[in-house]
Length: 115
Length: 114
Image 1 (cartoon, rainbow over the protein chains, first blue to last red):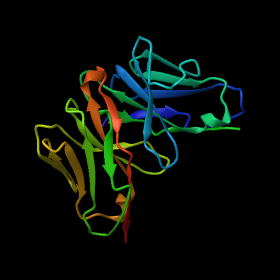
Image 2 (image 1 turned 45 degrees about the vertical axis):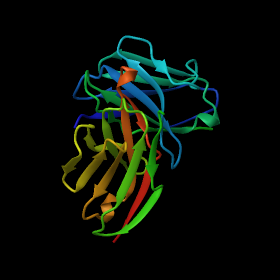
Image 3 (image 1 turned 180 degrees about the horizontal axis):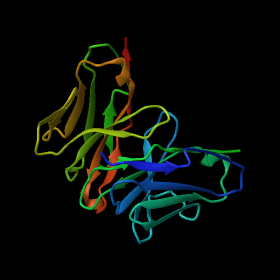
Image 4 (image 1 turned 60 degrees about the horizontal axis):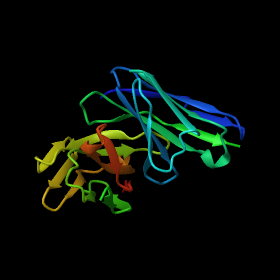
């Protein structure tokens, strides 16, 4: 299957700082990338969908100014959590899809802890 | 109508048993149904997927049964092993989203006893 990487795998930051998470498709071109958030023992909650070269589409209730998404190339999307607060602590997972293919391939996730 | 209902929430089976996880949906526009396996602290990994025009699909020890009229589908794990202990998520792809957005079930925590 296709490989998706995320960096960093784990990050601890102070409240008020910004954190950037990278999602890369290593062996295929991903026109669409998805960003999810997952709370302990819960399902994946879709935050936003990003298409290469265009603005991300955010799900209802997700603050676009807080969770900045950039999808500048066919292999890289970034999620920046701005002015992070303890309630932003979570497991963030990206997935990537190829053109015309329904299958999403997931990254390994990034554990964010905001102190 | 956009929900995917998954049951049971948790499941314990003996090694060699056949755990069955069920999902149900309402939106008949959904046209692709994948199952993912997730270990603690890891991202979900695709196990197997099916389309509505197929009633059953088997890959290794994993089988999906699909009932289009009932709008239900299920995952069967044959000869389950302790290494299968994980959380399993069903999903449905929404083609009307234009981006194959997934609607996920709530997950099933499976424990296979040695």
